[in-house]
Length: 30
Image (cartoon, rainbow, N blue to C red; front, top):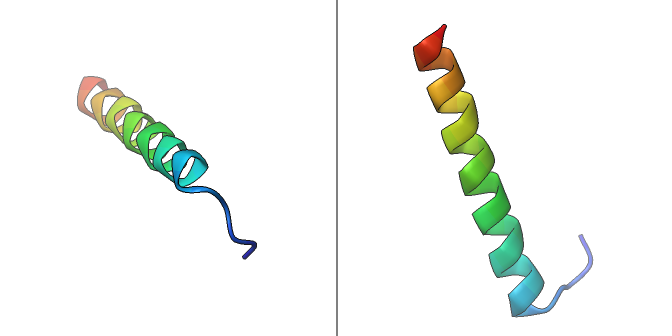
C-alpha cells in the first residue's frame, strides 16, 4: 500500500467512519 500524507489518511478514516454509521443506521431501520 503506497504511503499517503496524514491529511488523506485522516480523511479516509473519517469517510469510513461515516459509511459505518450510515450502514449501521440502515440495518437498524431494516
